Length: 85
Image 1 (tube, rainbow, N blue to C red):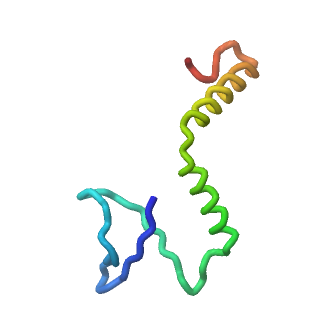
Image 2 (image 1 turned 180 degrees about the horizontal axis):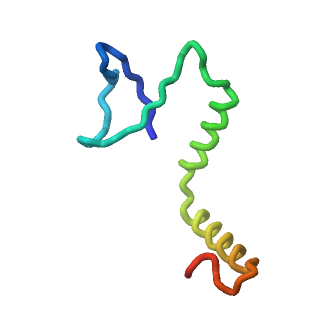
């Protein structure tokens, strides 16, 4: 995810800096009103979530997933596993 600034002119959104997009790529735009900024607590939560996503300790994530998968499969009423091995 990237943040960038655009200017609205004559019915067109024009980026203020070059964008690293491929031709025909679709993007989602959220319009923020500078007169009514989001509460700081929301921004703090977003920053925290982004930092978690960017930590990237893949080995720890893999081990956590394997533990979670095993725990969920062990605690089922059915003999059929929730996740296939």
